[in-house]
Image (tube, rainbow, N blue to C red):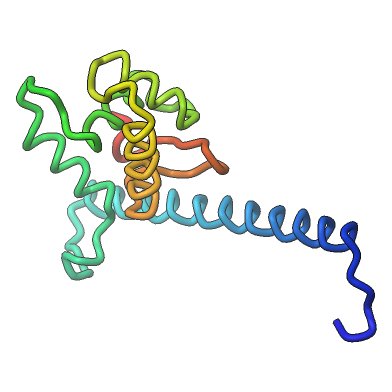
Amino acid sequence: MSGVEITPERVSTRIKDLRAKVEAKEEELDSLKDELTWWESGRRFFGFSEDEPDEARSGANEAQEELSISANGSTPTLREGVIRIMRQKPRKTWLSQEVLDGLRANGWISDAKTADHHARSKISEMFRKGELRRVKRGHYRLPPSLQE
């Protein structure tokens, strides 16, 4: 960009453009992850063998297994709590704050700011592991495999 004057307006415009591109790529990635989950579910439905190593399997499958193992009526882990809240309306796009409010209403997190931060971090981690789908920043959905 030599010879181009850098002004606050140019910087703001460039940042806005880059944010739009990032959001579009995140939506494309989410769409691809949803399609992958659909194909993996189809493979299991038809009884085809798994042709990938265990460590490459979807995080959503791990979350499903964790829920079935530890659903014992006691206070759920934070991961379980997030999924339980979101399963109340499984096809809804949830704001992070709505999930936090649900966790708090059930007594699964405290009113402390650190609890909010921890819960938001867990939601982000679940997205990175493929256990949640991010529609856009701060908006999450359950993947099809966890909408049951």
